[in-house]
Image 1 (tube, helix red, strand yellow):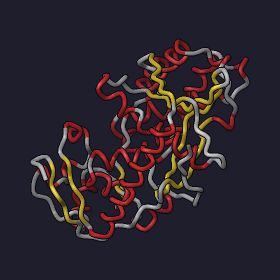
Image 2 (cartoon, helix red, strand yellow; image 1 turned 60 degrees about the vertical axis):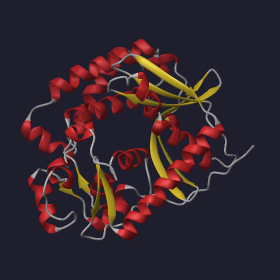
Image 3 (cartoon, helix red, strand yellow; image 1 turned 30 degrees about the horizontal axis):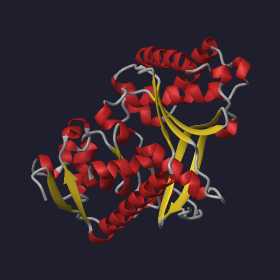
Length: 312
C-alpha cells in the first residue's frame, strides 16, 4: 500500500451490484472507495454544467440521426438542441444546479459549438444509421461478469460496422488516448458476447465534437478478449469488497474534482464510511442517496445473456 493509497473498512454491509458498466468500471479503477460510495451505497454526485451540456448534446444528436437523412440539416440540429435541453432540465437531478445558476445560455453556446463540430466532422445526411443503431443498450456476460451499457451509435461506414461514442469534452493528450477507448472496448466485447455468432464490430470511434477530432481503432479479437478478462477480474474484486467490507481509497489529481473528498479518510479524520455519521457528512455536502436496497435493481439492472467465447 503506497502513500497515495489507504485501505478502508466499511462500517456497513453494502448491497451488491448486479452488473458492471464502462462508467462504473472506470470508477473502480480510479478509486475503489468512490465506486463503493457511488455504486454500492448509492450516493449520487451533484449534476454539473458539463454533464448537462453532454447529455443535451447527446440527445440532440440522437434526435437528429433519428430523422430521415434529408431532414438532418444544421438548422434542424439547433432546434433539436433546444428541445433536448428542455427535456434534460425537466429531470429532477438538475434541480440543485438550477437553484445555483441558470445554465441555459452556457449549454446552448457549448451545444451549438458541438453541433458545428459534428457537421465539420461528417455530413449527417450521408451517415448510414437507423433508429435501431442509436442509443443501443447492450447486455452480456463475459467470463462470469455481467456487463451492461448504452452505445451512442452503431453505423455502417462503407460496409464496415462502426461503434461510435460522442464526446463533448477535450481531446485527450496522446498518453491518455488508449485509456479513452476503455468504454468502447467494453462495448465491442459485449456486442460480440451478445451476438449468437460472436461477431466483432470492425471499428470503434471516439467523436470529439467540440474538439473537432475523430479517433478510431480497428477491433481485434485478442484485444477484445483481454479487455473482457480485465472486466471479469474487476467484477471478482468488487465481489471481494462486498464480502470483506474492505476497499482501497486512492489519492490522485482527480480527487480535486471529486464530490466525495470532504468525506474521504485520505484527506482527514471522518466518521467510519457507511455509518450514519458519515452519511450525514455526505448529505450536508449536497449529495443524495438512492435507497441502498434498490441500487443494484434500478441503477444497473441486467438480465442474463450469453458468455463471450474465445474463437480462433
